[in-house]
Image (tube, rainbow, N blue to C red; front, top):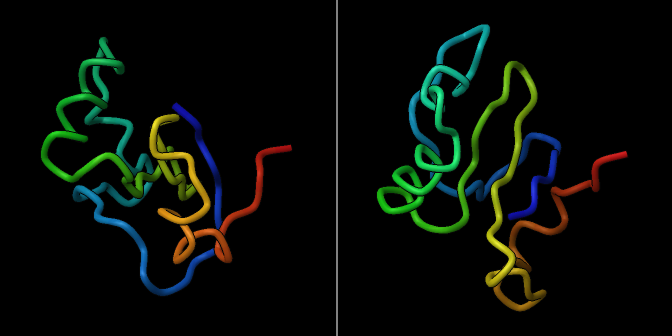
Length: 80
């Protein structure tokens, strides 16, 4: 699974609700791998989450192909 931070823009993938300061961290709990699997079953393999105040695009490695993410890639920047 790849984590990509990105700038705000249009055409973002689906996202669960978030809290103002902690974002979606409260939804990960003590087993984040299980929580991410449950969220991906509800919102699809490509999701937009906030880890704290950092917007993050969740992309499984099997979806990592330029054709399937062409609408999102202009918004992305790789992690440093």
